[in-house]
Amino acid sequence: MSHKMSRAEREEFLAGVHVGVMSVSLEATKSLALPIWYSYTPGGDVAIITGPSSVKGRALEATERFSLCAQEEAPPYKYVVVEGPVTSVVECDEEFRRSMAHRYLGAEFGDLYLESTADQAAGSVYNMTPEHWYTVDYAKDLES
Image 1 (cartoon, rainbow, N blue to C red):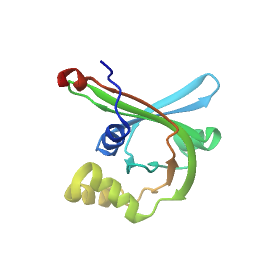
Image 2: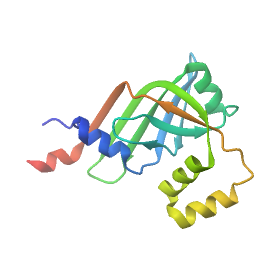
Image 3: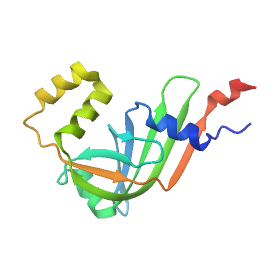
Image 4: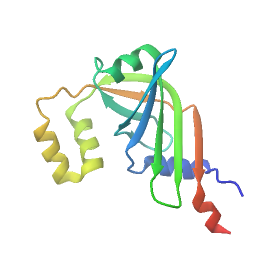
């Protein structure tokens, strides 16, 4: 039995709320993997927020590519990994920052988070167009 997700399944899963693990090359022999909030709408780009002068931001500027893994941490396990080029970088506005905080924390705690981090620079939104998809859904074993 194949554990591979269909296009609709993988896009729906990636659009769900998961803390992603972003991976980006730092140089020829080093890479960085770290948890990150992201947003995705089926058929669209993956968007993350980071400061252009941060380690992530500098690596993204240099490589112009990253990968992101979203996973289900309870059995039956499933995951989606996407990889592709950074297709645009725009300044993060308050509306996008609020939507990301609300996505992960809900309206009440999201607003508290925004209030407590108001003095921090919002950074930039890096949009990545998925070129490569890798998926596994072990729940498919239960479908037989």
